[in-house]
Image (cartoon, rainbow, N blue to C red; front, side, top):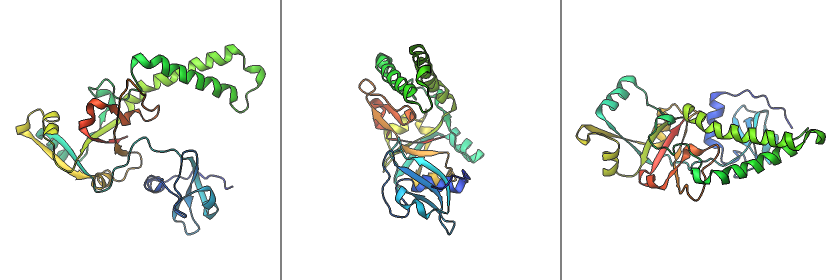
Length: 257
């Protein structure tokens, strides 16, 4: 198996984002847990290959432990709407840039949440068991070092770090929100413009938005999932793709960096 060179380029990362679902040689669909080999073939064309086709690589840049995206992809022709006051529109035109708001500034107290406070005990219990098992089965650990005190101390530390990471992510996650619909929405007019008589809506498509953002591989664009937080948790690493069912009418598509 080839050594990875880790020679990432913007173009290669962009290629992976656009072709990550299947092997570019045999079209085999990737599944959770499979290995995706990203690199170049003998003609220096970028490729992402499954294990069976990896022999075609002349350079392996990186291998990914493939996982399904947290969000649902948006079809290229899907219509996206953004409602705003005239002042925000003029600011966008004047600066020639799209504003991404900090997740920390959102009014919804569940922004980036994993679940409800009432279910935290269940969340903690699951991850305490998870970390406890991970510590005891980690490669290179000596059995004599795995005392009950060592295991519990580090299990508690890892859970604390996991819970603290949620607040940090709110500070460092930035979002641009869009409404996905074939036609304009009266409800969206009223929700996202303080004065309907002095407001407007931008209508674009997923593909146009993707290109307007220069196909930046560090920005993900996808559909929000609406869940009942009293019955289930969101995702550890993808919590900003989940909102309460009370917001289901928004049919939100997000660009996140």
